Length: 398
Image 1 (cartoon, one colour):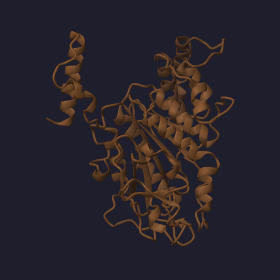
Image 2: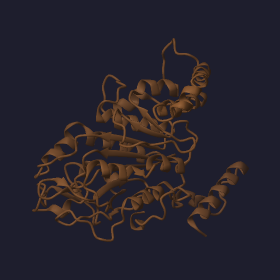
Image 3: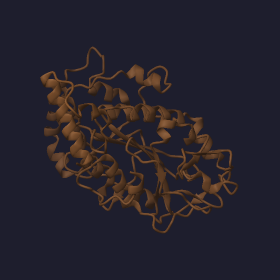
Image 4: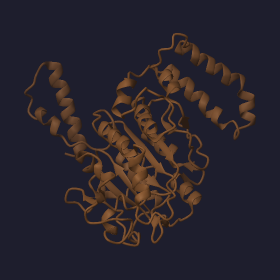
């Protein structure tokens, strides 16, 4: 019997036992030990996108021992007994339980120009890989695909069916829409939804005549109305801010910690894909790696990523996957543009390991899959049924 059918059988047996007041049906006690798999819980993906580049010293640390980026035998951390080595002062500070659900994934895209690499990583021609994956993962939330913060991804990310890429810059509006607002003068949700529907109807002629310039309104009106017509989502914003070390309960997502915490909020509200785009990672001349290490630890990024991964991996009702990526790795000498990328992926169904270990000169093996294979891996982790990017070539880390 397959794992999937076995789980289904045991769950059915457990439900029947509970309904009949029976607790000793043979096999029911095995339910808790039945192996879980992608697709068992609603999936969600958070992408922390380092615009400029993601240095392979973080996720293929042993490749540079005694050679580059200030890597020594003492500042790397081997994860378990695997072939995965991470930078000790950054990724190495994540919880052991998180590290054991981590993989480095190689992407041999062959591109060393910023805009070209960013477009290729997130767009397949005129199709947004972000929106396509969000659409494939399903769900009923009104807002499923989100960019959080002021920095939109490069290119035009058009809607696919009822899924569009929505931007969240300030969580106060999101909290109010989700039902967490306390303002006494806030309009009733049905009335607000009716108002948005009326505004859309009155603007229909202008929107139809301007499909490109009015894209944000064309896609935003339906999402806002649908969100207001859905039931509210219970959450404790004060608890969330405290967990991320944020004081004063601000709502503006202008800094990294707020963006990462905001990603958790959106996922708890039903979004299945959230991306945060962070500029400032084009670190030319960072020969000893101190600039990127300090940037990752100095502004609270690693602390926020630790809080996020600890909290989302503990969710029993969601399969949350965290992705850390950038335009490309940094080359040698001089920390310039390397024509490949090694990304970090964390999730409850990730098998510890690496397909992205680089050589001492930051090269990937010639058999390393390119961009489509990376997205196929993420779709497989999410348990999508339709394989929107083809078959997963990274089976050893799933």
